[in-house]
Image (tube, rainbow, N blue to C red; front, side):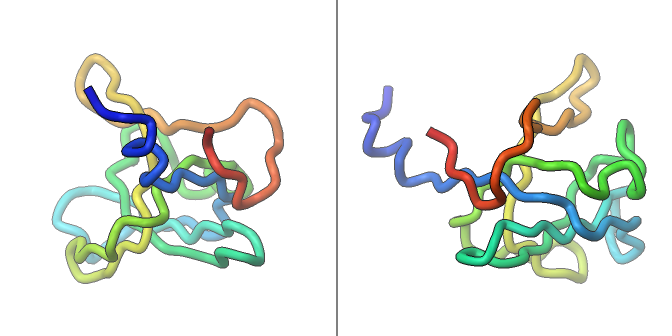
Length: 110
């Protein structure tokens, strides 16, 4: 069990995908995403293994949830600045967490 204060340390925000393309520098098939988290946070990049269910052009303009306060992480030949969130399907492929309504970029999960 964790305390609520532990949960509050994880900064989960919503952002809009403004660029998406196949990450050709990655060992495993993955997508490079540039996500806009609004004026206060700005744009952050990440790489995620999403190719099972998502094409780059289909993600443009979609909102996703991401952890924005992990330290940057080397993924292949790029530095990932955020961790997009998803749930595993039955074969352990990620299905993105996406709001069902338009949210202001940078909105914090509570």
